Image (tube, rainbow, N blue to C red; front, side):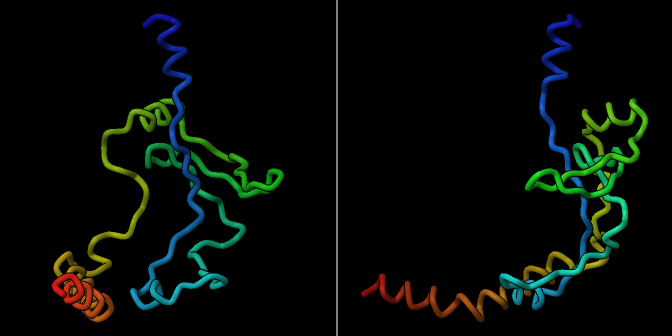
Length: 134
């Protein structure tokens, strides 16, 4: 690979994600979200934040303020070969997301969505189609 090719590759931009925390919420809690509501996450405000590239953990750091923006002070990084692997990741994501066993099955989720849409959107849809027929 020639030097210009290498320079082109090194100039590519990739998404860097800093994971603040997560939390599972019931559908009712999600529907009750409103401006001003505070959602507590599963992580202490002093805990290290995980840093990801291509959904693969490459390090961790602490949160800080940079001017008017948030920033992350990198405290540790994975070995260079692991960061390079993360850049070309085509394998499974390493972000720890809740497993499928933690929530409803696809069929249960579809039934909940249908019930929700039937209770909230069904009347509007029926009246719109009646208006269209008139």
